[in-house]
Length: 111
Image (cartoon, one colour):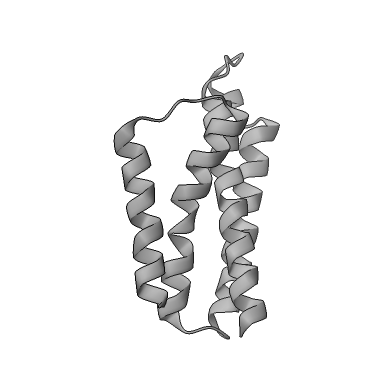
């Protein structure tokens, strides 16, 4: 079961990468409206999201649902960290407190 939990945790990280790719694509100027959806960032992001869906669906067959839901909440933390590291976005006190509450909730729930 631990292998599948680790796999789900990794998939949560890939979900965050997918979200950051979509964010980067939304900030770019495109030739026309169709290229807003048909560019490599968006296509890659949706491919990653679909792959994560398939892998998580399989992993849920081996892991209790209560653990999967907790692991999925890490995507918020990963999105904030990747936005800070890759996009150089600043986060405010509310976002920091929110992510700390998420991490505290995960710790409390799993202990």
